[in-house]
Image (tube, rainbow, N blue to C red; front, side, top):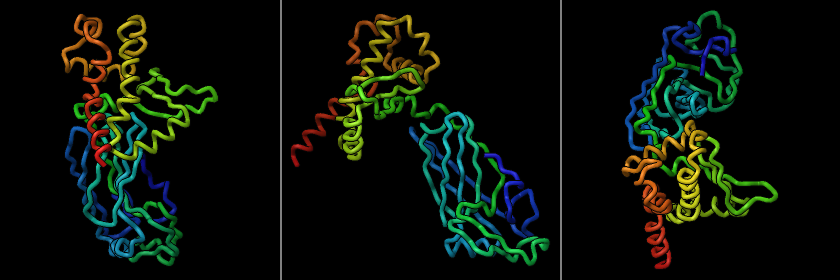
Length: 286
């Protein structure tokens, strides 16, 4: 997200302008990594008494805007508190991530006028709309390291979507993109969305939907070697290769040919069948 002074029809507290006198805004971020996410601890401070008063009145808040061009991910994390934490799923970003820190208007503000404004603005007030930027810090860059990228986890290379075609089948698989798209008929998808809200049913849904799709893909990789070149640029293909190597299996070798694709699929996913049986047994007890 590129920021320039030309974007603002009102005074903005920034590091490059003199719209405010004897005031500044600073924001810091510290991050830690887990196997599937980045956790950020944020701290923001401004010496503008006027902006601090608006924050106390809950009219403006601190915010961080994250944007990743590689994945087209964009999101704003915000708080009225100077110190706050938030979590960024690693599957949503890859490589360079641009971060901008702001103070944003939470609601419309009539006659916006602060004592810290430059004297040139004396006698003027401004109409601020919800979402307007009132202060900003220097842009920074965060590099999302691939070694914790959860796309190395097989379940995350699948996307389950509705198939709204008139002749939609119960389930279809599309492997032409970076993710493997599992398309469910509209009725099946609606039920899937409802059931998936209960985390206890996740291994059951994985066994019913993801495992068959993965078996289908593994069969293609085994039986249609001529098509593999078509998949080499696909993210899901690279992930499967990495996960197969974790189990000492390589495409086109005896280790891959001697084991059933359904057995391999369960290894890659993490044995959802056993988890599904446990979930059903627990459900039966209730």
